[in-house]
Amino acid sequence: MATIADFSFKGAKARILDPGDILYKEGSIADKMFYIESGTITLTRKIQDNVVRIGEAYDGEFLSERAILGDDAPRVATAVADTECEVLVIGKKECKKCFDELPPFIQKMITRMTRRLTQANELVVKLVKTQQVVKEMAAKMQELEGAMIESMEHHGIRHTKA
Image (cartoon, rainbow, N blue to C red):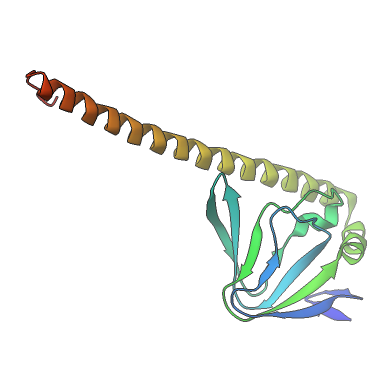
């Protein structure tokens, strides 16, 4: 039985990660959550063709808490060990039991906070996608401007910068 602060989790298992090991991949089913006993883990998300670093988790932090809410949604990030890590793997059943012991008000608050966090994550993804489109458009505009200037010079038209 593993213990985290005031909570005990029967069936929780310790896992050691070496730097570069993947704890979980984006898109996989969130059927367990994790507690970082030691080490640092980087979270990334694939947005279009780019892998974007969205955060880090350190000693004493939880990862994949959504697993306790039972929504069976796929993971929204990939978690990779930066350093050697000792991680406690806590199954969905154990998480749910702990969650169910909380007062209903706290359960509702956590559920709503989780939903808002999911929405905020989606807004970040939209923002990154928009930023990529704007960069591509700016590059195309520079390319077109260069072609226009070249064409004007070819036809003997003077060009002055504004």
